[in-house]
Length: 137
Image 1 (cartoon, rainbow, N blue to C red):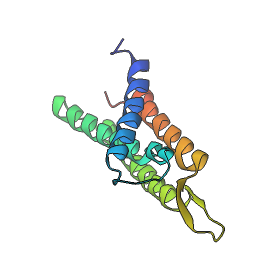
Image 2: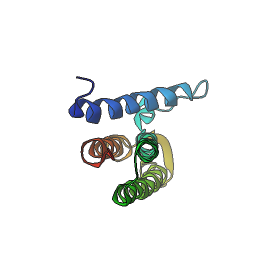
Image 3: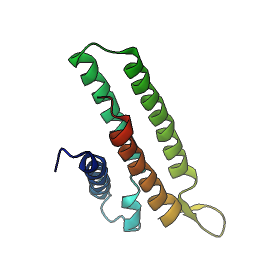
Image 4: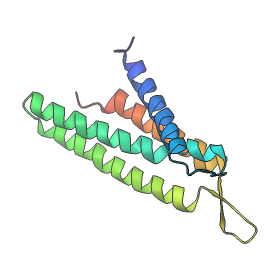
């Protein structure tokens, strides 16, 4: 079951989300009273883990056998795409994911849909897509 492609596409990103959430919880300052849903906003973390997975696969493929140019190009395309996804995720997290007060200033609370659910879902889908259709092997 662990070797099944559906398991490899679903289990790791869910584990990434849980690990990222737990790391954020551990990183909280003592007495931090910001909402716990902020800890679930881990899309950038999941994208960075996906970025590392693509680089690791590309390096292991290149050392295991003769490198085909198309595989390298394909891997570089994934790396470039993930780089832009990480930049977009950081931008969304910084400027669009926070609840605003009456004066338009961001509060310490993430917006549930735009700040947590959608970015996390998109990052999990990107990892799953790489595992299903983009794997370099």
